[in-house]
Length: 245
Length: 306
Image (cartoon, rainbow over all chains, first blue to last red):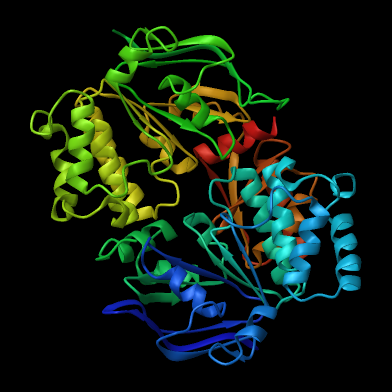
């Protein structure tokens, strides 16, 4: 099995405060990996290091085969990123967003044109191509944001609470997209506060106070903690947390 | 008084938008009730809160809070309600205790006089009373905002998405706090996008695109589910989902954690047997099918599709 994320004792300190403490994990190609934790557990800090946006204090990590200290630019070219808070520009049109993000991810203009048109066709957005993204229904925006994040065929896509506040139907349609992308071999690294979504992951980790406290498949974790749902597992692990956001 | 909040055919449309943010909404909240507005982003929850707290005028319809009209009697309403907006709205550069004192003074009261009401919540942030509100953690900000909304002993408390983006453990704690506040005879209207929180409310309104889909007790919403619901899984859930969605025996199919929730086009044992036989023939291994009681989220999805 090909490993696309590999970290060894990855640590980030801010002064005396250890935001992320000696995180070691491996994520495989095509896997849906859930990255869970309470508010303030250190998820965002860890994710920023994995995306090449923040330099670790110690430890090592390779993302898509690139070192996160020396090769941050290659790391960024080989990943996609999407969050609920920041995904697309509402006052740019559908096509303008595709051009903008395609450019950011380093695609050439011809490539952007071809891939952009294919994408619009695939999503059935032909008549919306020149409309502002802000005027699209939320479900469409999400689909578009996700598709744009994987437009450059990255090895890994990082999804930071991609479904927060979204209605239950749209939330499930979004997970259909995630399954499809994983099926095509794109690795999914996703955070969520919805515990039913944790069950959709192949494996997941739960962070508490900067440490990865548990890492396994949902069913193995439930067995280990004698729990009937991931909600119970999470509660068992996170209620002892000392710090919050 | 029996009715704490009344909305009577309230409509609100913003600017040149064609679709109203709140569309002809009527509902009644009883005094002392814990009432939930359950719906996703953009459903119109915040607009309803802002009209009821007299911060926004409706285009059509009327509404009252504790018998006070939201347009005519806005001063009385402002004195008797507490409002915790979705966005953190305290003074970031005042300390915890300064914020609390400020809100008490604005309402012509003192922290000491109503301390009993907030004690259980305030003791958790008291160690940080000298810290600026802007420097607090998310969970502590939320607790301080709740204290500030309660310090004048309001009759009605409005909480707009107090648990959005909050982890499951803190969410549970927050609802425990609300149950204790309710015991002090304060009417609470709270909104949330998390369907699993609905069961904590006495009654809930399911809302989408400005329209009320249903106003009921959580158990009545569940009882109204018209079909038998099943949970099903197999060793390859993605393959199973694709197969079920194109199966004419299956009426609906949605993922729910490790299971898929499905309804069948026909009811009864025979339909179940036919489904299982078909799946076995397609080569799905370890198929588990069981009858289940729907949750609020199942009900919401069904209402969305109608």
